[in-house]
Each structure stands twice: as C-alpha cells, then as structure tokens.
Length: 264
Ligand SMILES: NC(=O)c1ccc[n+]([C@@H]2O[C@H](COP(=O)([O-])OP(=O)(O)OC[C@H]3O[C@@H](n4cnc5c(N)ncnc54)[C@H](OP(=O)(O)O)[C@@H]3O)[C@@H](O)[C@H]2O)c1
Image (cartoon, rainbow, N blue to C red; front, side, top):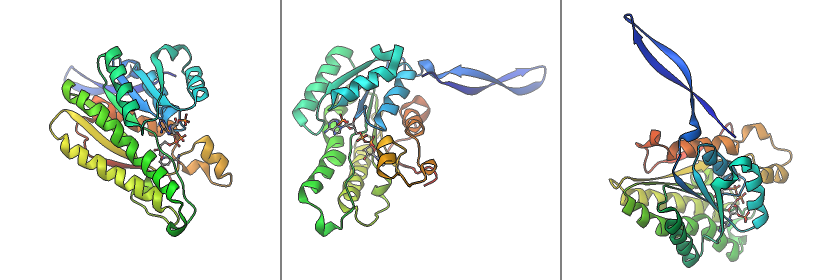
C-alpha cells in the first residue's frame, strides 16, 4: 500500500505567485523511525500498522494470536520485512518491560508508541456487571496504557523525543446506558493520558488520546449486521489521524483527546 499526497508548492516568478500542485510521496515520511503498535493485529491496529509501514517505518506489533500476526504479515506483502511481532500481554508489567528492553537493544530507539489494545463489554446495567468483566475492562483499556507508558516513556525521555497515541473511545465522553465498566475504563484512560501530558510538558515527548465511535471493523459488522456501516469511521481513516498525530506536522498537539466519530 503506497500513498500519494497532494502538496502545493509556491512558485514565485515574473511578479506572479501561484500554486503549483505537485505530488509528494508520503512513502518516506517515517523512514528510520521505530514504531510500536500494541494491538497492531486488531481491527484498528492492523490499519495503523500498515499505514506506518507504507510510510517506511519499521513497525513492531504486539499480539496474542500468532495467526493474526501471520495474516498481517501477508497483508504487508513486499514490505513484510519492515514488520516484527511480539507475543506479549501488555498488561503484564515484566513481560512488557522485557519487550521494550529487547526493542531498544535491537533498534537503539523507539520513536512512536500507539496503544490499540482494548476491549468492549456492555449490555447490562452496572449492578449486573460481573466483577471479572469490570476488572478486564480496567486491565485492557486502562492498565495497558499505564504499563506501556511506564516501559516506554523513560527511553523517550533519554532520547529527548517520542510520541504516544492512546486509543480511548467516544464512550469516555458519552456515557450510554449499560456501558458502565467500559465507559469508566476509557474515561480513566483519557484522564491518565491527560495527566501524563502534563508530566511531559516541555520534554519533547508528545502524548494524545483519540476517541473513536463504533469503528467499521469486520467484528462490528458481524455483531451489528443491521447497522448502517457507512456512518462508522473506517480503520484506515482513523489510522491517518494517528499517523498525523505522530508526524512532525503535529508537533503543536500535546495533551489532546480527539473525537473521531465519522457520521455516527
Ligand atoms: N472497534 C470499535 O468499534 C472501537 C470503538 C471505539 C474504540 N475502540 C478501541 O480501539 C482499540 C482497538 O479496537 P479494535 O476493535 O481494533 O480491537 P480488536 O480488534 O479486538 O484488537 C485488539 C488488539 O489488541 C490485542 N490484544 C488484546 N489484548 C491484549 C493484551 N493483553 N496484550 C497484548 N495485545 C492484546 C489483540 O490481539 P489478539 O487479537 O491476538 O488477541 C488485537 O491485536 C481498543 O482500545 C478499543 O477499545 C474500538
């Protein structure tokens, strides 16, 4: 997957200034950059991983099921050599610390962290929520970002640069019925990243949250076959927002929580 972006070059001459649209290749935008996409084989994560690969990044993903990693490798096609995977549970502090140490030993740096690990559970009022489900929501939607940030931020501080995008959800702001555990975990994740942004103010490291509404993933299409899929944001379009946030075009954006609702 290669992407062309249109850019405008200003040409000055013979007293006239006009725009000369020219095609600039986005291919090399993240060349030499090391990008970790936690949950990079998931419905959203794979679009994020492929978007960074298309821009020449070296991409490392975490996954739990090897088949999903192999499927992603296949999708990466001729760029598969730019993709590596770690079968690591990112809610496990010591396993995550070891993975980051391994990445730093091999690559020497880590420029971008995207946390696309998470899960949804809902459909019952709070008093019927199984405490195990409550713990699972906190673990995957909140603890994952905490553990990853604890492992990655010290290395980024040493580098004096780095970007972290944490995937939250519209549910962090919009608290529908029968979603208490999910909404609480995502709202807490936004608060945590906001506070981390304050911790990192002036360090050269940027952190932001994104808040998608229901995403147009295969899993959601199966779960809600009667829904109007055209209203849901596409993983590829959300990936573009994440890529932008991680790029040098977004150096002014730090501590934001960005809604991505499409037409929903
Ligand atoms: N889908 C939506 O409609 C929607 C809407 C708003 C926000 N979000 C958020 O967007 C993010 C991505 O959602 P998604 O739909 O892409 O989810 P998904 O398809 O279930 O993907 C989740 C990814 O995380 C990995 N993963 C899960 N638990 C892990 C763990 N403990 N350690 C390491 N990796 C783990 C999964 O690997 P395996 O597949 O190998 O288990 C998979 O790669 C989540 O934070 C989700 O809450 C999703």
